[in-house]
Length: 322
Image (tube, rainbow, N blue to C red; front, side, top):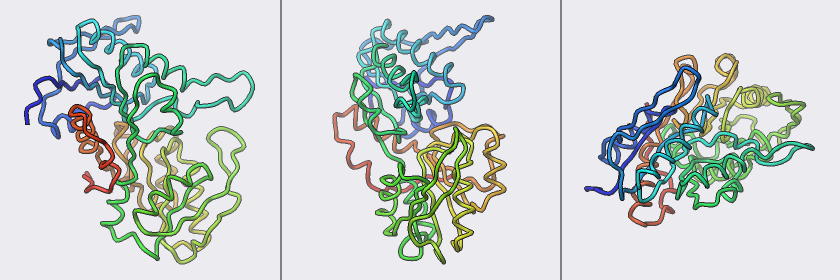
């Protein structure tokens, strides 16, 4: 099908995913040049006409978060000044999502600040995947379509035979119970919850496990894995309590610092991630299986462009593993 008024652009953060999305839709990526001056300033130039066109701009605000965010803001300004009709920002991963509230006195709510910046830049719609906290949708002053990764992850595990009575889906903390229950519903399993306390940032201590994991295959699920301390500690605790195998999964593979070493040395048999963040060679491991969300994003873009509902995308599809 021809979409003569639709154009897809990508910036620096996740070009591989953008190319897959464009292939799914059957369109080439729009031409854009990004130049960095000696003092670090960015100059972005749109290399073809966008007048009167509906633009879908794909960019994850992952590491380097500030550079990738500035690319978004500058690109949106360029598109707006070039008379694009609409500008939909496709954010597979939304950086600063963890700073969504004041945890102590005199802290900023940076997630809201970034949403304000995006909203006033000229973006007309945001499409994103698995926000750290669902209420972040309300931080934006433009419509937000919030897609979920659980159906893709569920499809993969189901095809590996990991469903039913012999499997338990485990939430690594109380905040992830809704996410774990959604995956458990897809896989028709029970859930367990890890009760932990966090003495300081990126440090977690297991306190108790609520639920029966003895003799079960366990699947841990989280929205993101950063330094992997929490997920590896949880996996080791589950094995210690009699789990026969421990799998882990997440939407956003941030994988900072010692994450890969921790994963390789942990009880995790396999870690399933989505490609919302483009991983470097140093962030790869034989234990990590990556599933592409290109089909999900491509379908979301087409449905948005055609003013059709996105609700069918919340069912389990066939995932693309590579």
